[in-house]
Length: 122
Image (cartoon, rainbow, N blue to C red; front, side, top):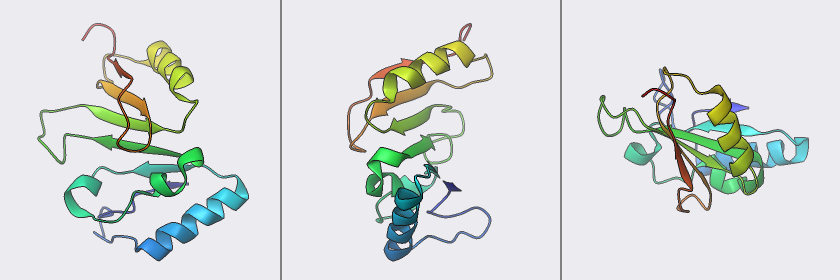
């Protein structure tokens, strides 16, 4: 499931905490993964990211171009424990010049960034 729980584009709707908890529980029971687009989360929400409610089954994708500045093209991918190495290898194999640098790290959402991936030739 792919969701933008905070300031959804075009509606600007933000999911309530009970709705986030319900989605997390449904995905946990179904064995489904959550890919959370958190592009506006830092600027607008005091609610926890879905990724913090389902640490084992979610990817939190974020970037800095919309919240900090248009010229700052850096992406952030917060991963469940145990997925960092495989994701780093996949990024290294499949990155192209069109891909912005990506910071990868396991979480707690405030956990350390373990690596910076930059496409070759940039």
